[in-house]
Amino acid sequence: MIHLFNNWNSIVSKINKAGLVFLFLDYDGTLTPIVSTPDKAVMNDDIRKLLVLLSHNKKFKIAVISGRSLEDVKSKVSIDGIFYAGNHGLEIQGGGLDYLHQGCKNVRSRLKAIEHKLKTKLAHIKGIIAEDKGFSLSLHYRMADEKYIFQIKQIVNEVCNPYIEKEQIKLTQGKKVFEVRPPVDWGKGQALSLLREFCEDDYDYEDNYYDGYDDDITDNFTIYIGDDRTDEDAFKVLTHTEDISVLVGHNKASYAKFFLNNVDEVREFLTKII
Ligand SMILES: [Mg+2]
Image 1 (cartoon, helix red, strand yellow):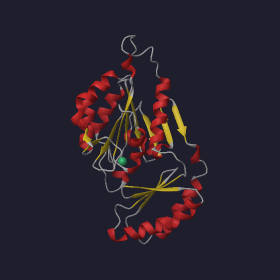
Image 2 (cartoon, protein in one colour; image 1 turned 120 degrees about the vertical axis):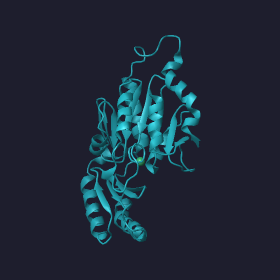
Image 3 (cartoon, helix red, strand yellow; image 1 turned 90 degrees about the vertical axis):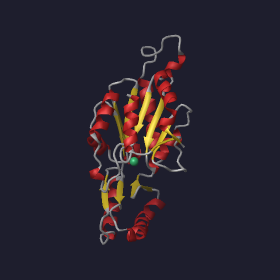
Image 4 (cartoon, protein in one colour; image 1 turned 135 degrees about the horizontal axis):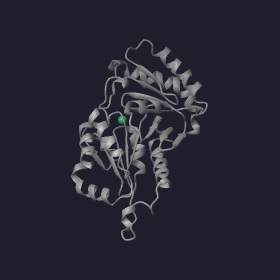
């Protein structure tokens, strides 16, 4: 993996040549540092100002793609004129787009039942937070004592396995969190593709940057920045050589081509592209 700033000149020339730059970002661990409980993840005002500035430039199509619920990520970021994807892309809004994956139908009551079972069986362990995200359920265990981790995993599997066997849910893992999700093959990668198609359909090449001489000027490309396992779904679909996949942190097994060390460097990146 290469540090994103090592290749800075080539990124600048790509941006200059592009018709549209898709700038897609994860929220937790990318725009905010990882904190002890999810409600404490507040976005720094500098980052908000930078994203607002970028959103005023028509070349940039900005989306925040999060595992949080759509309403939650919208209220936390709170910037007009950008796209938001919640529940890893199951729900997407912005720019006239209002999308809900059909796999979300009928999943609510099942998730409620699972939440109840988990809360009952985990009641004796302190520091576990069950977060109802509408179309998915997160079980955060960052605050739980290390000695319970194995037991927590056992209980989660015991509760979820009957549903997984009937293909009624799927279970994924993030940083100190289990996620119970609808059993559909739909994640941040598919959300990214849907958003790109939506924006490109909406984009009038003739009226915008095409000047009859330089065909390259409509070379759209994507920058995706994320820090967690679910972001790998997005990195995987960025197969075009022009696309820029960026992991916040270090992981040799990541599909990302580039890395940034931390949230401060994400802010520095936003400053540099402005
Ligand atoms: Mg994240």
